[in-house]
Length: 310
Image (cartoon, rainbow, N blue to C red; front, side, top):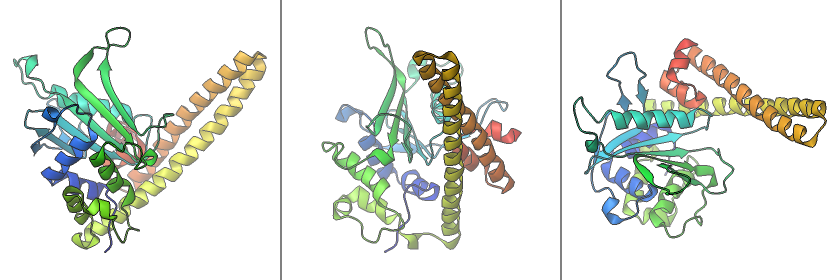
């Protein structure tokens, strides 16, 4: 049996955007619910394209969007590459989903929480852990939380099955995302024994896809590979530039503190400048080849508005 990777745009949306039972299991396993009462029992899919009421405002599209039995909304995204702008994009989409709940004249108490779950096939933090849970919290004294928005980022390359032995379904779903791909010929028995994972695996069988879909699948990975090489080159150039500028500034100051600050600032500025420049180059090439704006935004990290101006 041949399988496709669940991380591709085509397969991810098929598995989690067309099967309510699978997205329920997935969300319950990966979101930081603290009790059984918080868990999701049913979902209704919502339009993944969030069109603003004001036509002058920015449109945005997510991979999967749904709401549960109590009206809470969930946005699920599979991000292949980390860019400096991705967190802002996540905040923008979750905030848009939150404020769009209320019509004019309605009470704020009717607002329900929005959870943003982001699977990132890249690393972006210094932390050894793969799971990052963000919420709005008072930092200094009370640690009181403002409910409404919750963001979870998962760095897939850092995941190993022994990370969280107590969370069986979380481990099984992350193994599903990280272990199954085009090279898989036999799926591990532990995955196939679970009914939800078993069903999700069958959705990845190559025979279930048309020729046109398989061509689109290959095109997606070609696009990701090209963008990764260009972004990697950008980061390397930025590091080299930052080191050179940092050393020059440090020598000019002649002090240890100056050298350290110079190197840090030089690296940071060089990385940011180089990453932005390369992102623009990636977007320009993809635009010339006719890729959809949403795919260009995912690979380059630029906003759709920035891409339209290129």
